[in-house]
Length: 110
Image (cartoon, rainbow, N blue to C red; front, side, top):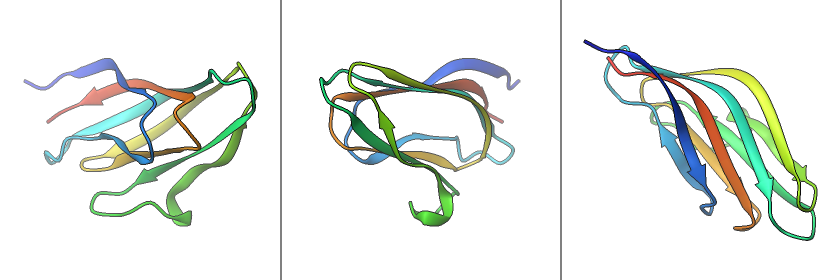
C-alpha cells in the first residue's frame, strides 16, 4: 500500500543538475512545500530553479526562479505549493557551492 510521506526531498550544494526526481511509477507525485537556499559566502550569490516535466530539459519555459539573489550570509525561503507528477524533476543551478538548497514536501509513490 502506498503512502503519502512528508520528507526532505533534497539538501545539498551540487553544481547545476537534477537534484530530485519523482518516481516514474504511474500515479506517483510529490508536492513541494518549502524551498530554502542558504548563502554561506560573504558576498551575494544567485541561483535558478526549474521544474522539469518527465523526459524534458531545463529551459526558460519551466524556470520557476530565475537568477534569484541570496544576500551574503543569509537565506531565502519560499513557502510554495508545486505539484510534480511521475517522472518530473527539480533542476538546481547555483552560481557556486556556497549556496545550499533544501527542498521539503510530501511524496506519494504508487
